[in-house]
Image 1 (spheres, rainbow, N blue to C red):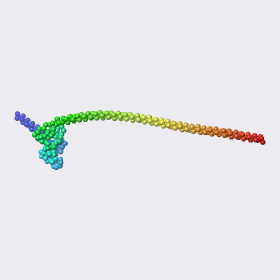
Image 2: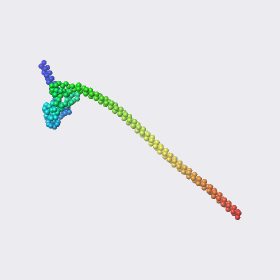
Image 3: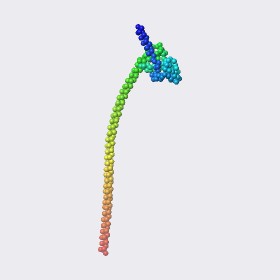
Image 4: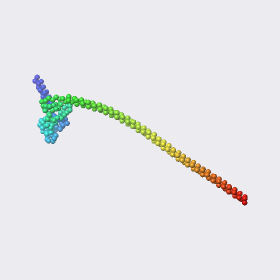
Length: 243
């Protein structure tokens, strides 16, 4: 019986000791733990220094409370509540061990007579549900986005294929246009040659007509001159007979 009572006493003592976080990390945010690892630590406001033994010794060595994040010794100090299962928060160290449960994990009342239950899991339930919905919405959005991206890629591939086809058709059409231009050039050249030949022929015909007309006009004049000469000669002959 005595052994059982002793074991129970040891268990209660161990539980009480476990309820208080180690002094090295008491009230310190995880991102600041490296700052407190040195043997001599500077006050953040530059006002002085303190050793690790003076860390959380319930005596304010730094006016800004750098040395007392886990106790209420410095009114300007800040206490970090881990609140595992919910959202961590920071409170003024003056609220540590004041009998009021400010941290849902009860870590701020480790030395008070008050009993703080760890309510972080229940408190964080709504936040976790909200986060789950947010994650589900995000996943759904990712799926929709991937579908839209796939559609866009297919549309781009289709457009590229259409563009390639149009470029091929453009090349063919350009070849036809070039052929038509060449045919037009040959036709215009032939028409020009035909026009020149026609003009030359018309000019020749005109010149021959003018020459013929000139010759025809000249022939009556010669005939009249010959008739006049015959008349004169006949008259002379008649005069000679009369004489």
